[in-house]
Amino acid sequence: MKKIEEYVRSIPDFPEPGVIFRDITSILQDADGLQLAIDSMQELVGDPDGVDVVVGTESRGFIFGVPIAYNLHKPFVPVRKKGKLPCETISKEYDLEYGTATIEMHKDSIKPGQRVAIIDDLIATGGTIEAAVDLIEQLGGKVVKIVFLMELAGLKGREKLAGYDVKSVLCYDGK
Image (cartoon, rainbow, N blue to C red; front, side):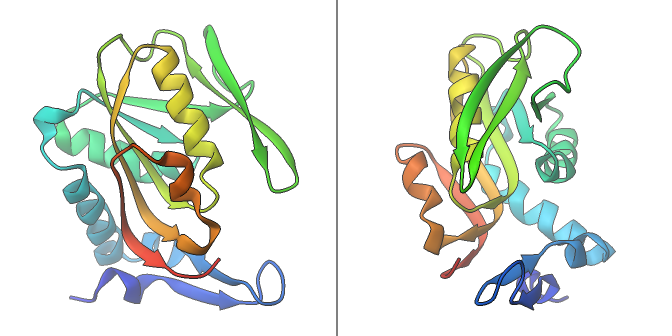
């Protein structure tokens, strides 16, 4: 069986010259690659008894978070872009490279004291997950694990998550 990094397609000069885009669609399009990615991320979550709920951020956090929640027999909570959830929500605005974005969660999605594992495909600057952590904590949840498939270490997103148990399956030095 291939290693997970062998399933990642690297595309030079996208979206701009000098950037190497790490494409996960090549993982998703291969049954072995997809299974390996989910299994590898789930292994980093660790003991399922230490987690009460799995949270995934829109949209690729859903791709990996739902099967992990299913495998661990835990509920899954989506964190969505503003205006996409039908019930009462809490929201958090955060900075992007050029502008801002807002994410939301249902107010009743996390119960006080619940131990939460956050799942996403990529950590770059860390802004989205930092905002998700804030929402979870506003609801009384405790973030016990944050797991990514890939990390772009050169963008220093991990620094925004200092103090949390952050793991990534793959780490690339650059941006």
